[in-house]
Length: 521
Image (cartoon, rainbow, N blue to C red):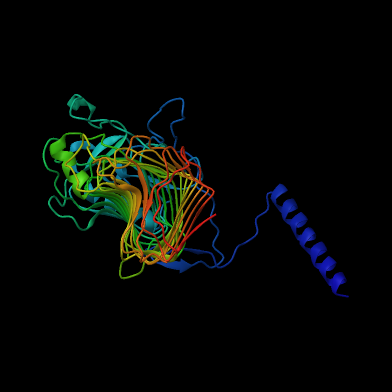
């Protein structure tokens, strides 16, 4: 009986679909009831048997063949107001769009376009969360913008732009092509936001440039370039050329940050209070605006490319940072700490640490296929006392696992480990350490009460003297197994329970601490 009911329902569904197909073929219309739409007052209303036809596509867009930069072409005619909302033309992907030029934006690098931008965004929201198009131009923003719920602020770039303005190049290389936001507001103020994204909002296709930031002097603070404040917000195809702080995501659950480049000076990306999976991919920070030491000294002493606070299940893929004090930092905020998956990440010329962990959640971090260099003597900034590839602080209580990653550059240590979490290296390559020739060990454990696991790694340094491990008797357990060494294995100190075995070096006379707690396999 139950099967008969199922089949009967299926037949009824098929019959309904066939009827609807016949209706469409004969051009008939079926009244649709209770459609939600904007009332003339601008508030959401409920229609009564109202019918709406799709707007005519009488607004023309540039084809890819006619323009390599601008995605859309718009009339500069002002918008006319009417009692009922008039829907704008459709873009090629079926979404509706307004142009900031229709609301008075000039894009001439002279007039302040802040008000025109916000008017366009507000009207886009009133009409039903539309796309706001910004044609090619240099748009001055002396105030700040809010992208309303569901709206998109769209520049001309369909891929992340890049402008190289190093001090050895002519000033004509400043960004003048495509959609450029010239940020003047908030100089000397390091809080607030230039562009704030409400939930479901997106910004994409721009260069953000700070004309008053001087390339050969100490950089000046400005507000964050973009702040993500709601669920499912997105930043794509964006160049933060010389911003103080680039992107901040707070309570932006399921955020998406992709294809971002530039030279953030103080902080590149900061994520906190995220309780559903956020994604960051294809982000590249490099000193394209300035490589002058008067400017980059700040980055090398204070700059942090990626900072993660409380974020649950963070996914990070194909990211890179060059010439910062810290490449990737994991901190504990009032909301908590981080756990996540980090694949294909890299940091070059870091003066303090490629990876710095203040604290992570107990289930912690998974870092795979990374490439890291920390430099004792950098061309880009002041000397830092103790450059280290991986610095696990005494405050850490979580798990940090690093696999199939490479570490090189003249650092003092590969890893300096504290805290009571479990720290593991698997299948990694360690090329250089002990830049100060003080016989520093590659992996140095101090005051740690957790576990250390090093397996299947290649210690490639050949210049003697070479020390590989310095352990602390506060360490609960240490496993050093299946590694290769270009010089005789040297281990100093021991954990409460240390197991060493199946390692291969170039000598049968390894140096280890002789104690009853070490087991050799």
